[in-house]
Amino acid sequence: MGGMNSGRRDQSGKSTTGDYRALDVRRLQRDGLLTAGKSFGWSWTRNGEKVASINVRTETDRVILDYKHRSGGGEWKSENYPVRVEWTPCNYGGSRAWFRCPAVGCGRRVAILYGGTIFACRHCYRLAYSSQRENLDDRATRRADKIRDRLKWEPGILNGHGIKPKGMHSRTYQRLTIQHDAHVGISLNIMQQRLRMIGARLGGIDEDMNLFRNIEV
Image (cartoon, rainbow, N blue to C red; front, side, top):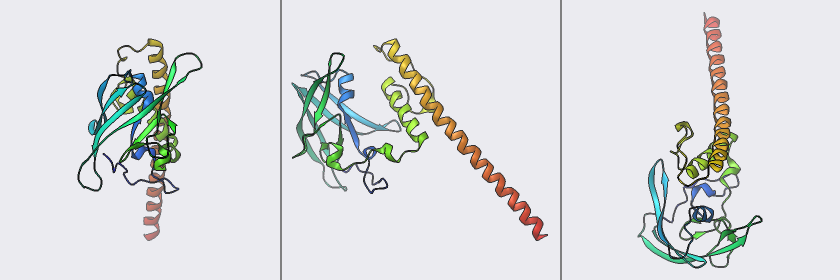
């Protein structure tokens, strides 16, 4: 890990959150992984293949991150350090988990940490949100894929529906499926519009070429 920045930039010249591996405390809480005494691996995939992983150990109000990273093809370095977890009450009962950014001098309360040499908040890495440079169809596709990940469906909006995850309430499953289908509909409609525009342009080019040939004759 480390050196995870792919080199992409937004219009301001900043790297974006999409260029870094994200560790989301909300996902850990939702999956029941923040109970003290747990130990598990966490990995990231691209096109169905694992591209990075870390080991996580949970203690009371903190997690211990254990992983290796390297930069620029250099030697692998081991990292092992705690990240504080803070809990705040929700309006309708229960509590919500937050990370405290472990970067020196920071300590912001955030939901997501991004993996470079260390896992830190987007402010420390000066990251812009990926959504700031997305087209409408890109945003709809990303949101649909995010729901697919939560539902544990096969990645890719063209792959259709999967099955309801074990333990998920039917009402939650139905709500997420409706949201997923709405985002997919937006993305596909815009893609169809673009294809029609491309077809119209190509048709116009053919007409211009025919006119040009007639003039030559």
